[in-house]
Image 1 (tube, rainbow, N blue to C red):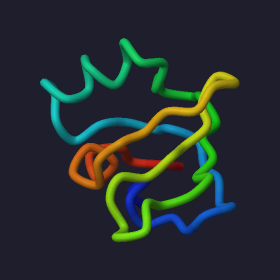
Image 2 (image 1 turned 90 degrees about the horizontal axis):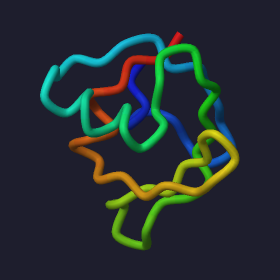
Image 3 (image 1 turned 135 degrees about the vertical axis):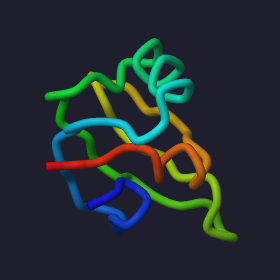
Length: 71
């Protein structure tokens, strides 16, 4: 399942990335394989989304979230 498919309040654990270039950027922001991730909310028009990872809130575009595969 992709991160972009989760609803607010749902959680998962990062498994891998589908885009190598984007994965470097995401890992620099704390989205590391094995880390739990929680979807907090979506913007009113559905993009971007707010997630919680490593104890802080991060905003991701749906295109970025679609590259994160969850366990």
